[in-house]
Image 1 (spheres, rainbow, N blue to C red):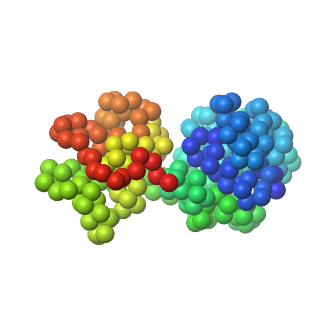
Image 2 (tube, rainbow, N blue to C red):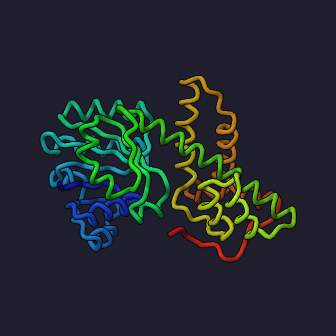
Image 3 (cartoon, helix red, strand yellow):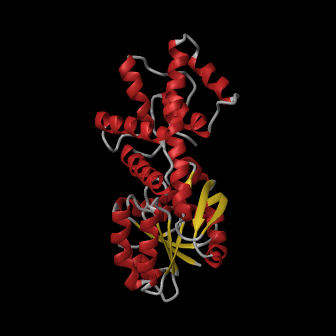
Length: 299
C-alpha cells in the first residue's frame, strides 16, 4: 500500500514517519519546503505539491490546520487521485465539514474516512497516539494496519461524523483539565507546599488526569511547549459550543474555559502554546509555578 501524506506539522511528520517505519511506502509534502530533508531522512518520498502526492499514492492522508485549508487541498487533489482511492482526514473538523467534504469526494469517486487523533505530539512520535476513526467499516478494516502503525489504540466510532464528535469531546475535556490543573497548582504554591511534591501527590490521587501528568509537568518546567496553540484550542472549543447548542447540552465549564483561552490569546497571541492559559493566573498573582526536575518537552 502506498500512502500519500499532506501536512507535516508537529503531528503529521511523526505519523508519516511511523507509517514508513512499519514498511509502508509514503510520499509526503508540505507548504514548508524545508521539511523535505527531514521527511526524506525518515525514508519517505517527497513531492513538491499536493497534486504530486495525489498522483503517486493509492490513498491520501491529510493532516491540516483548519477546515478552510483542508477544503482547499481537497479541491486540488480530487481530480488527480486514482480511481477507487480513499481520502483519510486526520485534522479536527466539525461534523458538518466532514459530511460536506465526504459528499464532494464521493462526486469524484473517492471515499472518505475521518481519523482525528488524541494524546499529544510526544505519543505520535512513539507511534502510540489514540486514533478515532469514522466511516465505513470496510475502509476501517483495510487501513487498520496503517492506523496501528501510527497509534496503539484505534477506535471505530461509527459512520462519518462520529469521530468529529468524540474528538471535540476529548479536546474539550483536556482544555478544562488544563485550566483546573493550573488552579490546583496555584493553590498548592500559595498554600506553601513544595510544588514538585504536590504534583506527584496529585498524580497518585483521585484528582489525577492525563493532562496533569503531561501538560502540568510542562507548566512546572516553564516551557509550556506541548506543540498545540491557542488558535487551535479556540477552534476546537468553538466546535464544542456548537455541539452544545445542537444537542441542547449546557456546557458551563466549557464556556468558562473558553473565556480563559480568549483572554490568554489576547495576552500572548494565537500561536502561543496552549498551557500558557495557566500563565494568565501566574501573571495575575505574580507567582510563578516552577519546580525542579520537570521536562521542557515530553518524550
